[in-house]
Amino acid sequence: MSRVSEKGKIAPKGIVIICNLDTRGKEILFVKDLIAGRGHRPILVDFSMEALPPVAGDVTCVEAIGTTNIVAPVDASGEHYIRDDPVTFLR
Image: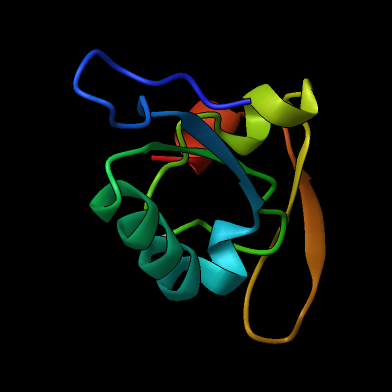
């Protein structure tokens, strides 16, 4: 059910987008802009695990996952390691 304002317009809604910003950043930002363009508030919940995302989500991967151990590639070889310091990693 939609809330209707006094002027008969549908009230803006918060719309959650669950995404991987590291691999689909451009596409997600496109969808975010479409939602915002319709007067709603997009909320990005980021589950990036492969690389540093180009932009931070409203809820970062550390907040969403609830851990400080981030698996991230070391280099182009695809080698992975556990990163104990997500604050440094996500900057």
